[in-house]
Length: 452
Image: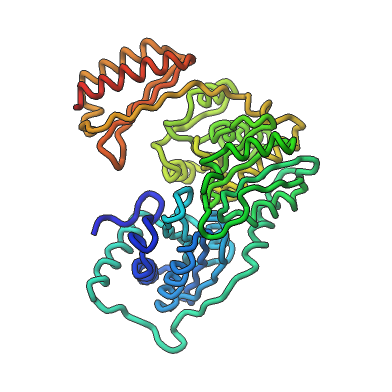
């Protein structure tokens, strides 16, 4: 059995890779491991379980709930809610464990299981490793210790979770959204009810698309990975802005009133200036990954803010934020973490804060986002090379030095070995797209020559 846990829980094709048996077994293993480390000591354990609308989430939820209850854990079943809602409710309700069933922006046949620790924080890597180890041990037949009688877990539908989460979202806004018309693309996903309700309660006039989940249409030609429908709807309705989520609503992208995309870097830039003005941007610092556009870095420097960059992945952004107590971080993809109000990326919260900035300043999103200029970015994947030698090849180092010398201060080069495939990603940014393409092409040839 290969490693089950990836960077964002366990994912795979539902009922093929991710089966009911696996979901049940991992849930029982999680309960036993948390009991071993003392998380349940002195009280009856409690878990929050939620899911996105995928059809497979119905049987996987049943398996997870059954596994937890059979291990003596009381379960609060919150139904279809975003990933950040499950994280928030895990903390707000004092639960020992949160479980979210979702494959985020993946296509409908996939699904996933993500565990949250007490407080709604990501489960530590060592605990995930232990859960996997215990699951593997018992999968081969070693018997579980099982409670009986009153010791088994009880299952309750916690219908108040929806209102409690929406109230949390609207309660953190610095101002209302009265006078704004906002188009929301919900990706037929987990925020299809939550997001329109939150924006409406905050005072916005709301137009929704992609908000009719049927279990099969999640992320299908809509949401944050397909912005064309949102662009068209914003222009057609004369809206002030549009917000797009992915299937589990932990990310947010936007479009301005003209239908132009506003990506995660631009959203971070807008929120960073807003939070500095409000006195909530601790250390005047923003955390982002090395893949952030150079235009974002230049904008932060010009505005007198510090940019801390991490490896690619919102988990690394979050680790840096928690370690240094920074308030804002995120990725170009739209994972934005506002740590004072969320323990993970929260697409609905991000969209609300962005809209609040538009309403509070009276400026258009296009104007606000112009604080940074996105430099042309070219990404080339070079397959079938020895990616382990990226940092040690003298030939490749010389090619990179030549490229950086040509680009000067108005460009950037990044070579990154893929974490899952035998390829190297070549990323080049430059003030001119043709120059970026030319440099990227030469570097890709250098990678093939040096590492092929």
